[in-house]
Length: 127
Image (cartoon, rainbow, N blue to C red; front, top):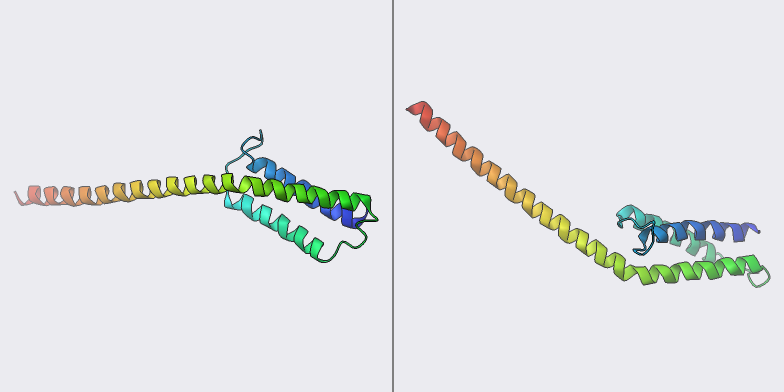
């Protein structure tokens, strides 16, 4: 395997594993995180840089042609996953906003409760 083929092969392997983790139908599925998306982006940028530098001789190197085809499949798979990832992220944002609102309400209740308790203690000391 040529160094070019190996580089793209390694990128494809890492990208495939990441996509397996992000695919809801996969047994390896995990909830999408910013770390996952950052790793996917890093792999895409790495492959993009490699492909921009040119893949001269890809026609003459069947393994490199195969790796380019595999990369294309990975990108198409990612494109098909994007709506689901987007929906999952929107759901997570809604959950976090709801949790924040709940915590803010609880904190406000605690502040009000302390004020009432402080007043009651002050009145009891005056009596």
